[in-house]
Length: 511
Ligand code: ADP
Ligand code: ZN
Image 1 (tube, helix red, strand yellow):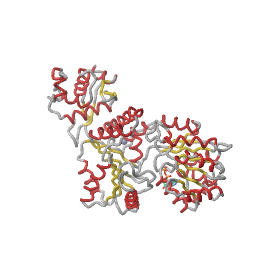
Image 2 (cartoon, protein in one colour):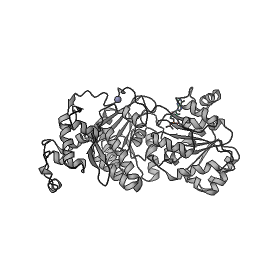
Image 3 (cartoon, protein in one colour):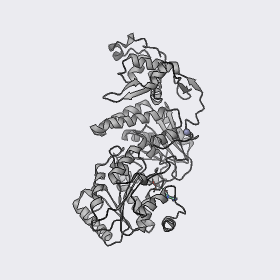
Image 4 (cartoon, protein in one colour):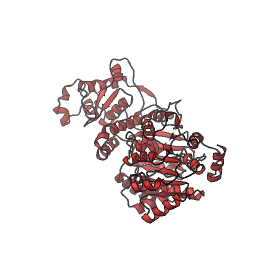
């Protein structure tokens, strides 16, 4: 390991390994396949780059993103490490030249897109190389349970029988739930004991969720108040990105934008402007950011709630890669849920919709929990949560705690009376005593719970229902329409066995 440390110092200029790196490198050098789960910015690349330098032959790196490969190869070359990539941006001649260099032993690392592995001719050419190690970046892409399944990742398995000896595999990801880890290990033939998961807790990030803010105004103020800071604002749709970009540039903010609907050259130039600090703020969809290594991002604001926790943590985690205190703020509105539902139903194939909707619900729960947000994230990723972080919006929430047991019972009773067959909005309509047509058609005006929360807006009641879901008193059943029903804990509340408390509202009037 002493030699590995010298490499770290010599090529990368760092004195010591970060948590997890040494163990992964040791395993790779001793021929043991591993799974490395490390948060974004944790330092995954070095885990295979150093073994690649130390092992005989050429290390293959499977990477899903062209821009990511190019950046990595550029910075490796800058550090005097012979590396190259093969992807669709190269001409046939350039591919030939690269393969030539590789077979002549001039390269230590070769980055390739997984699609390449579907070509028999390419595999044939690879089979002549001496490959000690295969690094699989963004390894969650191989799992159907992950949030970003890519069928071409399955072709990685073809590499296992290409040579007389199976190369060591190093799977790396920033976002894997326990189920996804299990899947990765099984598909890539990795021992459970060779899994290295390093702390997901990022001590320098403070999470918060704001409900019911005027989002545009909030963002403008925030940018104004933090006028020297660099930040990313994520929105769920291209349209929202364009809109927000307009608003901000009109008010004189130095802003760039990025989404998949923009022409390639514009995406590149906008990204450059942000990376070079020519634009202080980046407004983008989730198309932006993978493989971007910008260390001074002081805040990541989500203009809309993302569709699942994996995406959220990956995007928010782009703040504070330099280790300095940074803010991750999620601006929640109930309309975001519909937006994401719509996107999921449009883009996911049939078999995955239910699963994706369940993940979306967990995200909604996160937005409504009153516990430590950092701990909510850690628990989701299967880590044991410790003490509350003391930094997040909820830990620093000094609002008074109010007993809302009676209000909760009213809502739960109403859900029961309505046969537990309706969605949140409909239940809210009945509770506030709405006379809308559906309510009348179903005869809900005759229920004893009709109008028992009169005087509150339908939005307030909906938010309260979300809170009850987040608390586990109500549960959601996903079908053509999501419906809510009373859970066992909810029943205990109805029976008066448990109290329900909630923090007093500050920004929004709540129940
Ligand atoms: P990841 O792929 O896990 O998101 P990277 O490999 O891009 O993270 O590393 C994130 C940053 O941390 C990079 O700037 C990298 O140079 C730096 N880094 C990695 N290892 C170390 C280390 N041992 N000491 C200091 N900085 C490191
Ligand atoms: Zn906290």
